[in-house]
Image (cartoon, rainbow, N blue to C red):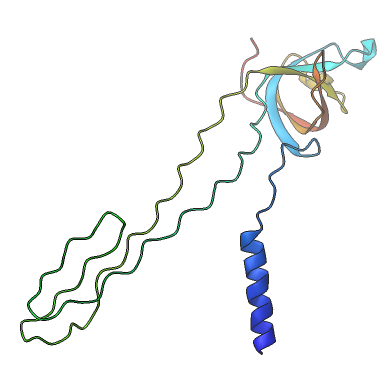
Length: 176
């Protein structure tokens, strides 16, 4: 029984203490993007392209762990004593005793909790990009605003970024 409890505690500590590394947007992650479909189709062997696409932002790094809480309050005072004010370190003041000189029923107040870390600022919006589409014949949606689902390829040194299309559908919007 003790061994089982110790094993559970060890697993919980391992999971809590060892954070999972955050990875950047993997190229195999399936995303949905919207934009204007441009191209003449497979007859001319030209690529379909999606204009004015806003790619999702990469995931934010994990937040730092919060600080520890404040200490417990001081022991209760003796009869007739007032409680000193709480100090800036987050410790509670002492409790009040009753007039009869009996020890108090409860101790001082609870310590103040540690403050949560500040939230990371939101990443700046990414500029719209153009994507070269592969994988489906998109002739039914030519010159329309569409939503496509698929995977983004790596960022090339020059030219448009590749996007492998798994599915497409028309979407509400205007091509400009």
